[in-house]
Length: 448
Image (cartoon, rainbow, N blue to C red; front, side):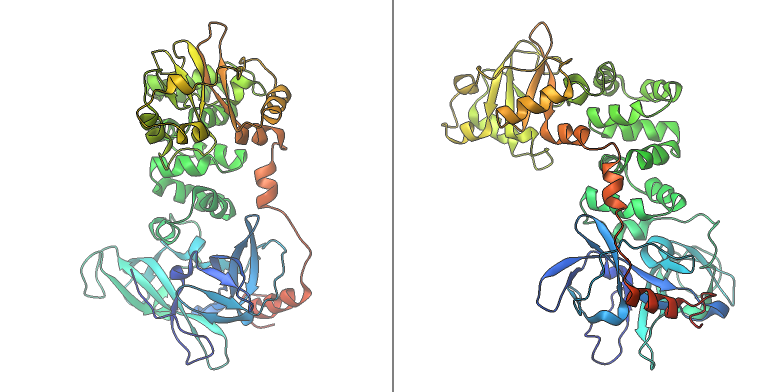
């Protein structure tokens, strides 16, 4: 990775490598954090002139990308960015002449002007000019092969912006390794918001570069339209692998949005053991306990110890709602289980000796739900008993799964609630519009 020294902007002009800004917290002058950097907005110019940096794309709550003009940024350090405090909460909408550095420049294949050698963009750097404008002046590139630079294949080096061509090409394929590396530490929900902002073409490239587990986690956080679009551009074998990595309930929800022929083809390609619970979930109506439940709750036999139960709850990858309680069932303990005996709440486990058995602390008075119970009744039950999850059993008393409060909320909210949050609009800031209009210009050259 190219390393640059991030210094105060009010000192000597310095070089800042922009991929290193991904995820850096942004603070106002009072020291309050307002968000994190998600990208950098630049304006490409004609005749190979270095692009002007217009500003930062900062994600504020709730998952809204807003534009902060570079003229309002007072300090850039490796662990913090400070701006003057004036923030327009209007959702950022890119103009045709604007380009996102991380989303659209990283991993692009470009060519050396002199030799035509193909290179891959790893990072880009901005420097402040004598006129106080910030310009993209340097590009960190990795060799793809061929002649030029006289360095080994795969080695990274830094060249001048003017020495390269190919940044304006949008039809060519583009990798995503550097973009993914820049946002490696993001939680799935936050990375999903980044991916939602990309063009459909770029979303497909990022999805192709992600591993199955990471892509599965991200798909679960995306609006349904994005889920269907991304899955539809994967080959069937890869799509089946990703569905296997998703939670059965999330995989069922996604498959329910697909045409029946495509859905059945994917289910056939999935591992039978992975497809079986998904098929069971698809057999229930969407707005019922059976359609809402997950088939992977925490299940223990009655002779399990409190220590063993607590060890299961400590799994850091576990949904907090599912970790709130365990379900005691006679073997087998894979859904659908043997006879359901009751629920054990984690707070009760914390008060018991580690060697004692869970069968001694079972809450048998909490009645489970039946799979055909409608959504409103499920929500009322959770609210009445102040629960975050509840068991679902069949007519024979076998545990089928558990409904969690987050899944209930997901179905009570409007169908497009994720997209509504991601695409929320606010009022236009005239000053910001003036800055962007001046910097961008009518033809993208930066002059009016």
